[in-house]
Amino acid sequence: MGCRTRDERSALLRVVALVGNASQPVVAVLVPDERGRLPGRGAWLHPRPDCLDLADQRRAFPRALRLTRAVDLTQVREWIVQH
Image (cartoon, rainbow, N blue to C red; front, side, top):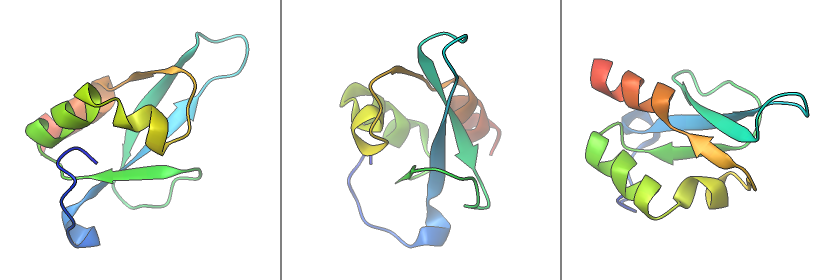
């Protein structure tokens, strides 16, 4: 998503949006899906900070995940830094 470079599935990280219900804030939390098994629409990107930053700058996550809400990338950033 960020660098727009094709790669093998094993080299990419799947990201899924967890959207709260009406009682929660209007923010979709993006979480890393290491196994590729979480339900919902997913977006794939290289697990590198530069690729994540490019995707965030281009606002690619709301488009790819078909979201009308703001996105929180905190969990994805932490996962990338740790791995």
